[in-house]
Image (cartoon, rainbow, N blue to C red):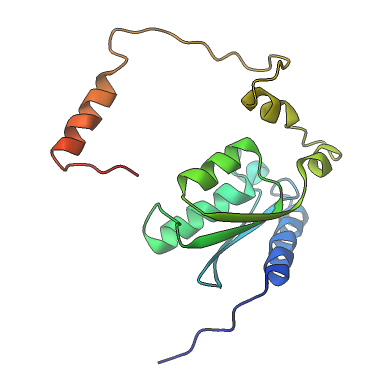
Length: 166
């Protein structure tokens, strides 16, 4: 039986994430962000920002790496994984990390560092914290008589063991 390669240090793994961000810039695929995901100390996924390559505004490095890790493991829960991001995750990526159940995320550059080169999403952090912000996107509640139908169907599916919570 083959042995696993030696585990990498946190510094090595962060350097891999930073290198992945540089790779994405070099390829012209997106912003200067990279991510690496490990499981039991072994690298299982890497990703860099691919927004320009894919025309997908959600193709941030962390999301790309999470999608890759989930596909490789065949599950949506990365509860036994660690994510290394070259920069502080934006609110969308933080949410993806949460929903993937990744218990630990290390980052190197800060949101302020990203803002200095044009990636200023601090207003999103402020909005989440309930601070008044300039309205860049209106999110409006539209009451509809069938609003709760998907939730009712999901609850029935849970009760009949046809679905599970994640």
